[in-house]
Image (cartoon, rainbow, N blue to C red; front, side):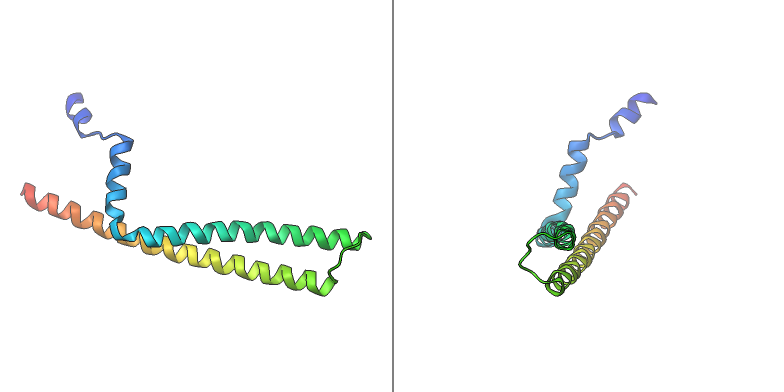
Length: 115
């Protein structure tokens, strides 16, 4: 029984290679998801930076931007961050759905062959 379990067990590298092969034409969606994730990360840092600029201006530092500009830039930055996170989620869900569909087809074909 233990030799049968060993023969059914695959290494992590083989599993990763098969998942990448399943991606195939989905590479553009994966690239969009990575780009949107990077944009949202930079925007999330921007919200913190604009908040720090606002606090520094409130404490009396010489900041060339008015409070209106600081608040406006923070809101715009947050809007871009939320939209890029939403786009990344859409890309990820689309990619997951297609991979799962291909995986199910592959399993179905394998089970039909064994019958």
